[in-house]
Amino acid sequence: MKALTTALTTIALAFSASAMAGSTAEVEKEQAMDTLVKKLTMSCYRNREGDRLFVGAVETVRFCRSAAKQTVAAAFEQKGVELASVSQQQAGESIN
Image (cartoon, rainbow, N blue to C red):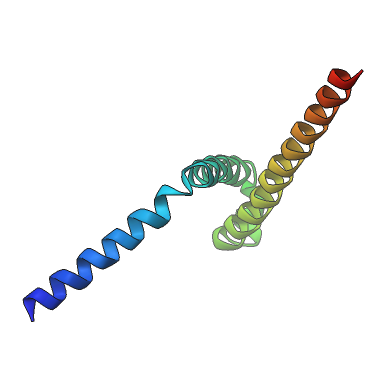
């Protein structure tokens, strides 16, 4: 029984490692986004003392987290659009 458990654990770890190896850039991007979301959420929460008193701390955190996620997602999307447009401009200049 112990051998079966060890074999299944080894297989699970190997599968997990292979899945993680291909997505290092994605993981780094998600970590950066999470860090920004946390910072923006806390900044929003600190600046909304009135909302905390009237609506409650939990609802204020939910609102701030939602707003922060939308802001960060839009910023990363815009950055991707900017990078794509810059690469197209550089490609157009190299042709001319």
